[in-house]
Image 1 (tube, helix red, strand yellow):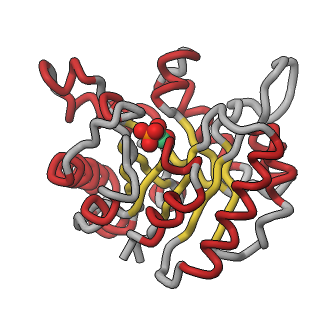
Image 2 (cartoon, protein in one colour):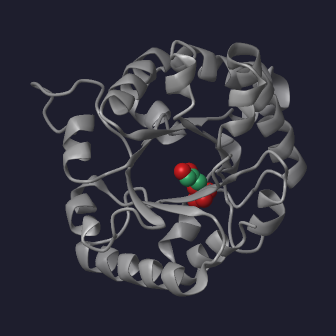
Image 3 (cartoon, helix red, strand yellow):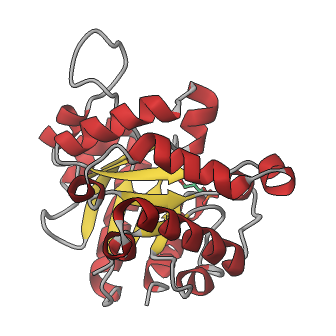
Length: 254
Ligand SMILES: O=C(CO)COP(=O)(O)O
């Protein structure tokens, strides 16, 4: 069964007091209002993960996610946080390969393969991000580019392990721009991603993989995006910073 997920990527936003307020509002709204079969993953800045844990009941509908982890388990990597550390404080998901990390921190497909391995070895579910630039979308083989991101960072995994990964398709031209991919553009790419996975791991696994859409998704466009057959939820940036709007996005999953 394909799992539906709406994840909120807070990025580098909120003070501690603001983060606590947002956490308690979202957790309460989701508890009171969301009836459908959807998992909500909240990904606050790493600094707030321990505090955030107190707002989230283990085994409930809301889970905790990190925005990144280092590929090594421990060592002399000043400023970094590892998958075992995240696991030890009750984090369940980790966003890996976000386009902002690829762009500003030079993360490569090969390095992301190592991060994916470390996350999975430590019981974390990677939310693996892929997606093309505007230039590629307009002038290049953008489908081939996204397929290569998946091949290079994920296709070394055994079928059993790969089945644990969540994919997020986030076209860079749609992130934070207010320019959402149309539901047809999202569906087309999600279909291609699923077909690419089927080529490597077979149809059963491809049909079961959760593929999220990210990029200017909000309470107005979420229902149409989530209604597409290959769109299994969203990875939400700006709209995850407001409790009312984010809860409305979660409720748009049918
Ligand atoms: O990057 C994103 C989520 O990871 C999407 O960000 P926005 O929803 O702000 O466009």
